[in-house]
Image (cartoon, rainbow, N blue to C red):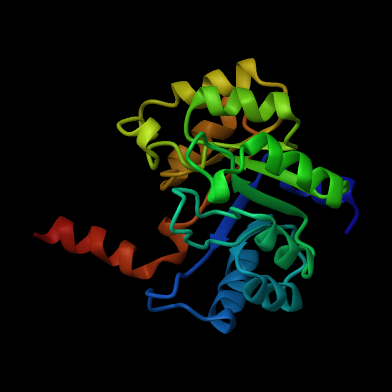
Length: 230
């Protein structure tokens, strides 16, 4: 799949996040591979996946562009999405079309700055497409200026600096602002959990939209039904 073909495939369409962490019931590369097949059969145009193992399995089963990440905790850092070159190197062994990484102002491992990390990746892997997972508009501005290929709203409401700003059903002002002010394509992600929200953010003009928990985390989906009953 060439750069132009996968990028055209993602534009205006749905990306499904197929992830299950160690403590979740569906944690398994085998299961995530089948989850990706189900997403493809449902009409997804791309997959977001966590770990080289899961991506390797998914690539065996579906021919969809993949946004690859590795979630890993570091004691000296608040950043856990593709935090260091170790994770980049691991992802490059399986060749996702895009690598996403935390591009917030949160403290990074070993005191490395985002600028240092970004330029190190570009030097080592000049052809890789990079997505900036951001939590505030200021972080998006910085990622845009640095030259990330895609800007994501992934971490809005999930960092100290963005608490209280989670994207809600009737307020897409941050996404609207990003689409209007930034040069790079915007990928909407984070609390986009209904078909209506997907339709709305695409109407605003985002490049594509990622949906995860509302499709691929049955324990969380079940909780919403149980909560409604109670």
